[in-house]
Length: 527
Picture 1 (cartoon, rainbow, N blue to C red):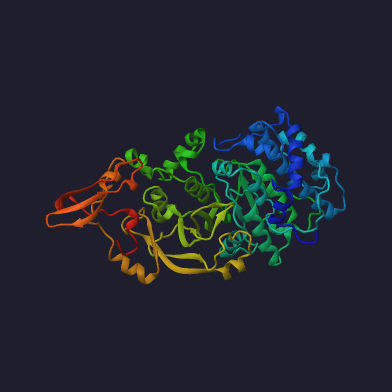
Picture 2: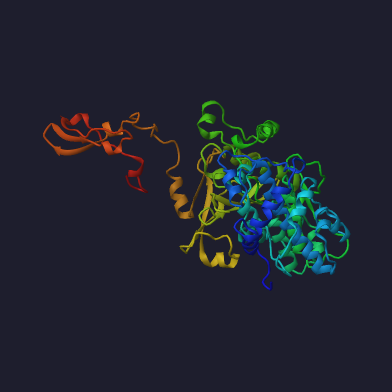
């Protein structure tokens, strides 16, 4: 294969619809024993594991065994890529059994490319027969395969959303990364940001090994740790001599590993709502939520949704404290709701603008052009500096990205193409209420923001839920058939009722009929 391997090609070759997957996954499933089941258990009642197994000819599949088979298969592709790269670089052929127990990597002086013990025996059933030959690879080539193999519901439960290469490329550019700074991705997944930073450094003439020594990644998922190590390995042009791949299996919030604070912290933290966290982990992190002032609502407000906190906000606060050096740069992908929502993001906004150590420099709103493996998320890229000086008091630069094309999927195109396909509208953003830094952020062009500020303040309007008929819209919603002097001829609207109703035309007093304004009757600047 003369074309460099990419994430798209890997998905085509090894994805769930490929001949290789249909041959290898059943073989792994048959080889798995109870002793080598995955430590990650299937979650999500919406996943039909039995039907998924039938796609591979596996009848009545055990969910835990089938998930383990998918993970072993994914790991086998990663390990094959790593072994092939070493063979290309060193001319040392490999035996698959030596790859499965890590001895091939140890002999090649790769110090920490370890295969998880629970999957070593099952990997033997995934011997790479008739796999294509290749010589070069570009970027994080494993993320699309993971998204293709692992059901969306399970990835959602884990908060695992993999970042498009162009977006990681843009964020690494924005922090001015050139390989001279240290950089950490504290939720690195398969290593998209780290590989992007590595390639940026090497394009600027930094030796690959020197660039690697400036990087570090952390993740709780052993499979992601393995994938990130392999991605870094195959993007290195020189692997001779001892080599340690700086990826650590740990929880960034409770990691015991001692790190010197980093110049840059960049990445895509886990997007999981508080209520979807594992119950034990919720209890474990409860004190941290209070410590950073992220629990600002109680009682009925929490019940009505203002208490739906995003774990990514807590993650951001902790990693800035623990891993980012003073005057260091933060580049994180977050949900737009952390800045825009009424109550759920209030504590985080207060942290950003009042008590936290972060000075927000700019925000890029890419929510209209981004998706993560088919999942549409309202996404912003937040850029900030850790400082002990004054906090944000002025409006913040805010760019809204919009596509110029009808094409909706913008994941697999380079950054220069994204620039050509989009328009970036320059705006400013600031809290709606100046005196309340926890209030939602308002973003608009500067001239409009000035005008809108004149409208802010306490509204005389007392908001209510509106007219609630208890399901009887077809009874109380009326059409005026004819206006008369003191009466009107009306007809009820049974088509707006969930129940079958009779249509009745009758004459009633005019003063008993009131205008009705529904939500879909309201448009911008008019109702």
